[in-house]
Amino acid sequence: MAKAKDIKATAGTTEDQKFADALAKEAAAAAADSDFLDDSAGQGYEDVRSKTPMLKILIATSPQVNEADDEHIPGAKPGHFYNTVTKRVYKELNCNILLAKKAWTLWVPQDQGGGFKGRVAPESIRTNGDFFKGGMYTEEGYEVHDTFEVYVLLKGEEKDGPVLFSFTKGHIPHANRWLQANRTVRTPKGNVPPLWGSYWKIWTSLNKKNIQGVGNTQWYHIGNDEAKTTNCEWVRFISKTENLEFVQPNLKFLESAAKFQMRGAGAPRLLTDGGSEAGADGEDVPF
Figure 1 (tube, rainbow, N blue to C red):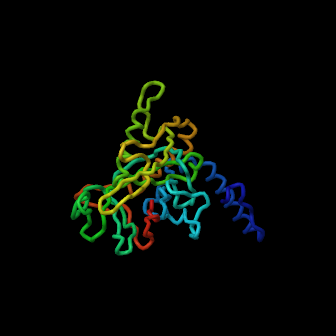
Figure 2: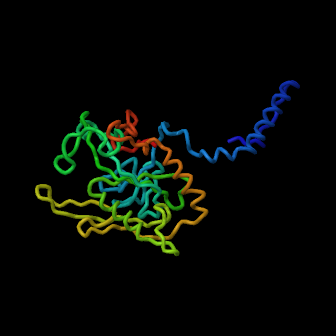
């Protein structure tokens, strides 16, 4: 990216030289007086589509763990975390919670090809069915998933920006327990720190159950479902430098994003729309 001091006059006529000198002078003056831009950092991208990094928990059938698959990642195993954009794999996470939001996410049914369609505020649209009895659907036939969305910064990768960690169905109790644990932390003065004030270590556990009519099944959650325990361990508070350099700028970005501008039930709004770009696995969830 060009900086003011990098702008050089171009060869040519005297008039060309004067014009180039004037441009360089304007650029230098603007650069010296650009602090106001930081006050609006991240704004203006509310409707700009981009591929949101998402954290997924790998399972035995994930292509990343299959050595014969083109998407295989050396060292990836079931139960590891996977970043859908950077393609990095983690045995455990060391992360900071930026923001947590409840939402209804909309999906095309798998027998119709699957794919993410968007998110809306809970209770803001007309639906049919029940989450606990056969599922809930929109009037257009999309599946509705009750979702707890947690945006995190990964330690050592804060400059990469927020990563979405979505909790649905049986995963939601673990999100709740993680946030409850966050509220039990106290500063040296005895106060409850802000949600984003700490780094946490998170890891997965293998869950097993014999389901009638299905047989033995197993899955990974960030905890033990039967014991109702969640794998979250407080690491430390963030530093002032981390707060200023990483946390606050990313909070401003998230809070200005369109997905968090939820309207009431009287005027429901599709906060994001997967459209034709959304993949069957929901990786193309836009900011």
